[in-house]
Length: 119
Image (cartoon, rainbow, N blue to C red; front, side, top):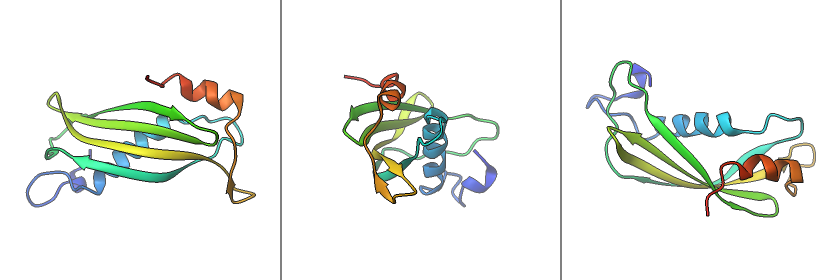
């Protein structure tokens, strides 16, 4: 976290945590050519305040909840002090930027995302 992520009350602004979730998703992303994943839906439950502390690293746990034809369901939880501070449910879509349209996941992409899938 950065000092500028906090507000007058010393807690992290609700919009700033979206960047933390995005960083965690991007760390999981398939970097092979043509693997364009976009965020199509995002729902967040803010369960408790996230406090800014110098040098502290927060934990984001990410899991794949569903693999569809062209979409991926994902759940992310951000933890501070051993407690879940926010829970996010999202849908990612495999996207063809040239065609400006969704496209089916390849077998290679399915294998990539299955590593994080939970039942």
